[in-house]
Image (cartoon, rainbow, N blue to C red; front, side, top):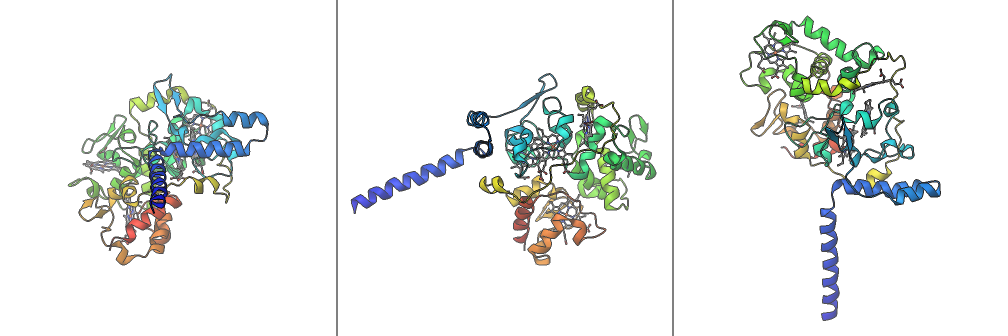
Length: 359
Ligand code: HEC
Ligand code: HEC
Ligand code: HEC
Ligand code: HEC
Ligand code: HEC
């Protein structure tokens, strides 16, 4: 009896100890361990194995702009320059060929992707951890970043087409009747010359759909715009930067005209090896705030009033319908104004879990 109690005690201590150790391990440490393990496994030559074995678990960072700014994305995105990681899921996956022309030690990651360079948790680094954080620019919204350095004339037109259309829309809807941009325009609304540095793209999008839904009592008119027009206006406004951001890109402005279309990401593959070994889950409720859903939707009594309240959404839509809606709003709400937020599988799953409990 005593003996089995003793064994039980030892086992309990081991389990508890392991749980504590596991919880104390930082998220980024798990990605690094997975990366090192896989790097050793994939190494072809002895020297590569040796290199992989000698990698240390540590915060990694890029020092940019003569060391005045620091980006730690590569603490988790470790395989970006290792061609052996083409078949892995993010964060370990090899980057597309764009890093050859924009080497990370000069350009970093944030200039193209947005996000919070100093952070070392996924939620914070991707700008989904706090209200004022800069969310990643995804999909079409990355055009704003390309435009910041390339303007409209050094890349093939399709690479910055949304920015050009956005500029035209701002002219054709006479936004400058009330707003100044670079010294020109009216004074009824605030100066927009720096709005891209001061607001997130989700906020600008929401405000363009229905200003009163985010700024109570706003006198800005509601324009009847299509989803694509709202996207293009938002992408253009994201190119209007303050002096600090402009100066940051000044040494990196592109001059040469590029005729080749930009190189795409490595071909997607079915292999999800590392993703499934490093467990990562989003908390649906947190993500609802972090991904900006609450800028437009109320749950109970908090949130914006750009889209419908979601307090009882599970009575109206089942999980499958919600999943389709979040992956592609146009699929379920064609012609609607719900934005494409470029959510990935993990994020959709977490949000559907959260929304399905709202009944
Ligand atoms: C703590 C680790 C961590 C840090 C730091 C981090 N990421 Fe990530 N990143 C991840 C993980 C995990 C994924 C895959 C899961 C996901 O996409 O949500 C990912 C995915 C991505 C994706 C693909 C998104 C998608 O929807 O498929 C991009 C782009 C990205 N990260 C950019 C960045 C940038 C830029 C930074 C720095 C500002 C950064 N990450 C910092 C962990 C991190
Ligand atoms: C010159 C601009 C540029 C720079 C600099 C850049 N990226 Fe990217 N990145 C892109 C583009 C464009 C894509 C493709 C996005 C898409 O599919 O819409 C991409 C894709 C990604 C993805 C998603 C890949 C996937 O799984 O589909 C991740 C993760 C990522 N980048 C991380 C980084 C990190 C980390 C850095 C810094 C080391 C970085 N990027 C630097 C432009 C850039
Ligand atoms: C921080 C500034 C910056 C950003 C952001 C940026 N670029 Fe560039 N890009 C450059 C510079 C500088 C060059 C080198 C050519 C030059 O000096 O004119 C370049 C070169 C290129 C080239 C030519 C590559 C080659 O091999 O000839 C392509 C294509 C390109 N960029 C596409 C993009 C795309 C697409 C984006 C947005 C996802 C982007 N760039 C974002 C600054 C930038
Ligand atoms: C009749 C005048 C009027 C017109 C026309 C107008 N706005 Fe506004 N706008 C305002 C006023 C007033 C505010 C301040 C209240 C608010 O934030 O909603 C404002 C605020 C904004 C803001 C928020 C700026 C910030 O940083 O807080 C943006 C972005 C904006 N407008 C974009 C536009 C765009 C894009 C158009 C054209 C499609 C436009 N506006 C047309 C009056 C106008
Ligand atoms: C920029 C504002 C905006 C943001 C951000 C936004 N939505 Fe929406 N959403 C809308 C609008 C507007 C509608 C109304 C549908 C339409 O326009 O057709 C809508 C519709 C919906 C619906 C269907 C509601 C119903 O009554 O049938 C759901 C569910 C939803 N959104 C969930 C989300 C989630 C989850 C997020 C965050 C990932 C999100 N939304 C982010 C604007 C937004």
